[in-house]
Each structure stands twice: as C-alpha cells, then as structure tokens.
Amino acid sequence: MAQQHLEPTEPVSSHVGPVTGEALAGYLRAQATEFLRALRLHRESGAAAGNGAAPPVDAARALRRSARRISGSLHTFRPLLETDWSERMRPELAWVSGTLASEHACEARLERLLLALHRLSGATVFPAQTAGVAGGPADAGTGRGARTTPDPKRAAPGSAGPALHPTATPDRGNLTVGAAKAGALLDRQLTLARTRAHSTALQALGSSRFHAVADNIAVLASEVPLVGTAQSTDLRPLALAAKDRLKDAVAALPLVTAGHPYNAEALIHGLSPDPAPHPQDAPWHQVRLLLRLHRYAREVLRGDLTDVRLLTAGEALDRHRDASEAAAAAAQAARTPRIAPATAYALGVLHADQRHEVEAARFAFQRSWQMETVSTS
Image 1 (cartoon, one colour):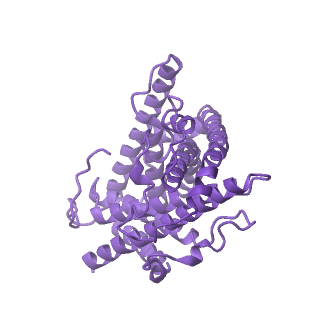
Image 2 (image 1 turned 90 degrees about the vertical axis):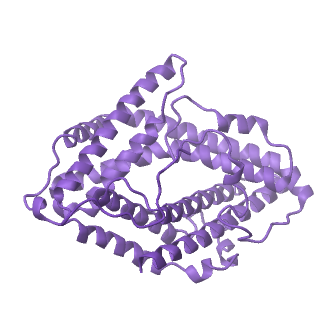
Image 3 (image 1 turned 30 degrees about the horizontal axis):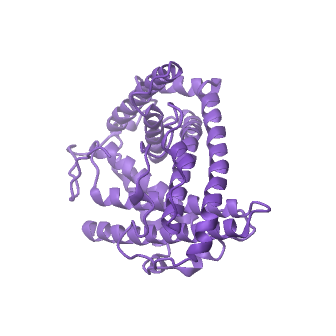
C-alpha cells in the first residue's frame, strides 16, 4: 500500500472564516479532472492490453474513486447545487462506481475464501484456483483495491486484533477431504460471476449512458452548477450534519454485542434456506457509507487530509464488508444441489470462519470509534 501522510491529531483547516461554495466548486472540478484523466488512462491501458501489454495503472479504481467523491459531495452539499442536475447525476455516478466494482469484488472474494480454506484445512493450496486469482485479464482492476497477489494477513483469523474470537477446531480429516472440492466449486461460481461482471463493465463503458456521464463530468471540470447563494453559504453546517448522521447510525449499532469476542447470534441465519443478506449486517454497511460521506465532506473543507482514526475505522468496516460477502458466497455454494457431504461440511466451516471475521471487524471498529469519540469530545 502506498504511504499516506497521516497525523494522529485533528487536522486544522487552512481556511480562515466560513468555507463557502467556492471550496466545493474547486473540489468538484478537481475530482472531475481526476475522473477524466483516469478515463483516458483506462482507454489507453485497454488498447495496450489488446496488444498484449499490461496496463500502467489501475485506471478503473481511479474512476471509481473520483465517481464516489463527486457523488458523495453532491449528496452532502446538495442545497448548494442545482437540484435537477444534482439529482440526475447522483444515480448515474453510483451506477458507474457499482458496475466497475463488481469484477474485482468477485476476484477478491475468491482469493479470501481460498486462503481461508487453506488455513483451516492445513492442506496444500489449490494451485489452479490461486493462479487464476493472482492473475486475470490486464484490464481486470476494477474494484476494491489494487492487490493482485494473495495477502495471507487479509484472511488470517483475528486480523482485526489479537484473539478477537475463539480458534475454530473443525474435524481436520473431513475438512481436508472436502476443502479441495469446496475450493473448486467456489472457483467455478465466482470465476463465472467475475467473467459476467467483466463483460458488464466493458459494455457499460462503451454505452451511450456512460458517454453521457463522461460528458457531464467534462462540463463539471470547468463549470460547477452552483445556486446563486452558494458563494455566501458556509459549508460547515452541512458537513456537520453528515457527521451527525454518522454518529446517530453508530449509536444505533449493537456495539455492546460487538464488544464481546464472539457473537453466537451472528451464525443463526447463515446457512438457512433464505438467500437474503445477513440481517445483522445492513446497519454496519450503512455506517460504512456514512463514514465515507463524512470523510469526503472533510476533504472538501480541509483539503486532502486524512485522520488516522477515521482511516482505521473505515478499514475495519471494509474488512466487515469483505468478510460478510465472503460468508454469503460460502453459504450460497453450500446450497448447491447434490454436493458431497464433505464438501458441504468444508463450506459450512468456511462460512462460520468468515462470520468470525465479521465479528472481529466489528470489535475493531468499536475500539477505533471509541478512540475517535474520546479525541473529539
């Protein structure tokens, strides 16, 4: 991971007096410029990939980064922007970001699950599947980070902190027998999903819908549609409202439960016939989104400064999201008809392991959020 200049203390705004719409306009112009630059690099890397060369940068990730920041700023500071334009752009930017995220999400999920199977079973790693995860098409970087090789620490138990949940003690013999077939099943399912997501992303980037978004971003790079009163309106109350929404959402979380090393209730619905998302996870995913909006609002007010406490909290929620989705993928694979008992057993153990990781991430978030609360109180 590239080094970031982080300070453990609350950064001080470089602005004197109210922060007005001009700061918002400058931020949106900068993000629009980054989007256009990433789009150019993505097209260049796509052409290079067609000639057998590797892309120079993860351009799709940069596209998503800019799209998220523009969309988040339109949401937080919408009273200062022309309503029709803002309401039309926000869902389109969300569509761009979500479409570009799907492919790499499948790749990262498969990597996480195969590493967890290897760790739990003690068997040799699955060479065919791992090779597929570590490689992939040259323009496959479309999602949640630039990692292209397995990181054992990502799936290690208790990665969110020491001894955050009990060590699983599965039947090692049965697990070893079923792990290889479970890994092959997950590889087939998630590789198919990744291929479909790749095709969808390519179609989206060539569509008239995406070209319309790019045209609007090109206009935004030079002209921000602010309302007439924006130049005299202070942004700080709107940014504070975003922070308050985050604090209210965190206050509604079951942090008392998350403060315990293991929450047995988190496994109740895991392998049930209902394919719906885990009922405990939605509030945590919402907090993750609100934390992102809070961070983007701080960027508008203060420049590109990151508080290490918010970064740590965000990383914990990212791990929560990854483990939650990995557990859901294991549960979905376990519902495959006519699989061998040993395979189903391995997938059940894998699901429980990832739900342990969910609990570890919640515990880590609680600790980092308490540090944030103490430091700002």
